[in-house]
Each structure stands twice: as structure tokens, then as C-alpha cells.
Length: 331
Ligand code: GLY
Image 1 (spheres, rainbow, N blue to C red):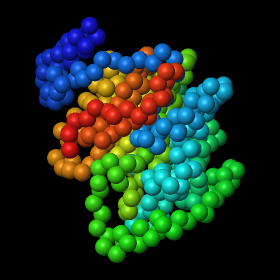
Image 2: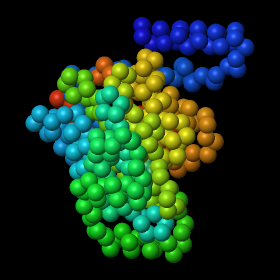
Image 3: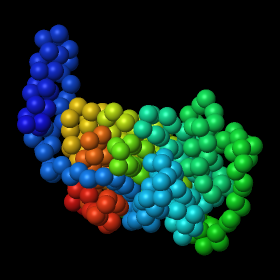
């Protein structure tokens, strides 16, 4: 019933636009939208990107179980990944930019849409916690670079000067040729994005990354950008992205997913329709991966990747597992 109403709504909107002399807005592939039955959690649900999401979810679940808030859960969950210095795409263990600097991006957002974000920060272990402090202690949403670092030092955060010789060796070898070719699901196995809902229906999300390996110094991806790497609106849902950040920024990807859920799409449909839009707008997507995770305000959840290989960690009262997401391309 819901799906049928959805089609009727699009049909009327399109007719009205044409009657008003407007250019017809390209529709997504409507026939392809109905991809999976809606899966709903009976109670709290936590989703996070890739297999590094499993220990992050475990921590977030523990936080909820011990009475912490959903915001505490999404912060402390991804802090586990930030502190894992064997992780080459999140936190200080991440691969550096092309000049040899590890630069970090993170953001956090709560049920009511309050948000905090930091970008291009160096030598701090927990950028997601700085992002939360920006949200809670300043009138701003986003601080970047030296200003963010200075503000963090003034507000109780300390530097972590760790340098990982194996990471620098790998970078030096790469720098000898500077031949960067992204490999989907390997070098772009990047951000941890987490979206979660507690048993009362409160939503929150977080995102943290060292970004694309060997990027141009100063490049910032989608992960700290509210609406691109993460978007939460308690009235509609929450979504996060992982993969080539430029694709998520150009389409305001996470915001798009949430807005489609607001219009009645299931989480899988919303993620997939956003990916279809990315496909339509980008002729060249070879080797690129991008995936979205989503929780709708009614507790329905799902995720979808551009190509095979995108997985996400799922935690509910009765499930704790890695899920292979549906995908658009087999290769
Ligand atoms: N998705 C992370 C980045 O592109 O930096």
C-alpha cells in the first residue's frame, strides 16, 4: 500500500510540474525501487560501515545498555575505531595525504539536528569528540585546520604525536611513483559512519575518517560535511555514507537518503535511489565505491552500495553480525 501511494504521489507531482510549464524532473528508475522487504528492529538498532563497525557497534551497544544516551553511543562507538592504530582509513593509523600528513575529518549529529564537525585536523586521537564539543560548546557547526586544533587544545583535548613507521614507509614507496589508483573496497574501505536508534526511537549518527589515502594536502571529503557524510533528522531518519567522498558531497548524499525516507521510501529504496542519482550524474565511476546506511524514524533500517563488497555491521537486540549490502554493480 505504502509503495503504491508513493508511485501515485510521484505521478501527480510530475503532472503538476508539466502543467505549470516546468521542465520534467528526471525520475529515478521507479520499477527498480522495490528491492527488499522492510526490516525493522524491535528496540534499539545500531548500523555502522564495514567490518570495523563490529567492535564499534559492541561499544555503542554497551553504552546504551549501561544507560548512556544515543549520542554517547555513537560517539564512543566510533572512538574504538579511531583508537585502532592498525586501521589504515580512520584515525591516526590512517594513510597520510600525498605530502605525508595524516589529516582527520569527523562529525556527529543528534535527533534534533544539532551538529558538530571538524575537518583537516592533525595529531588528535578523537576528532569525533572534538566535533561533539564544537556542537555542545560553540554556536558553530564546523571548525577546520589550525583553528580547530587551537580550539581543541584550549578546550581540554591533548595532542597525540604517534607516528607509525610502517605507514610512513608505505607512503614513501607510493611517493616514489605518486601513482594513485583507488581500489574499490580496499583503499576506499574508509570511513566509519554509524547511525543508531535507541529503544525510545531517538536517533543519532557519527562519522570519522582519515579520508582518501594520498589525497592532495588540504582535501576534505564528505565525512565532516553534514548532509553529505551524515544526516540526522529525528522526524524522518538518519543516514551516513562511506566511499569516495566527492560523490556524496555532490549529491548531498546522506541528506538525500533521509529526504527520500521522509517521502515514504524504505531505507533500502532511499539508499538505492540516491545511488541511482549518483550513477546518472557521473559517467565515470570505474573503481569507485560508495555506500549508504539508513534508519527510518519508524525503526526500519537498511543499506546499499554502488558495487559489490560493501558490508555493514548490524546490532539489534537479537542480531550482531556483518551484513553484505545490496549493490548496483556486480564488479
Ligand atoms: N568518505 C571519506 C572520504 O572521502 O574522505
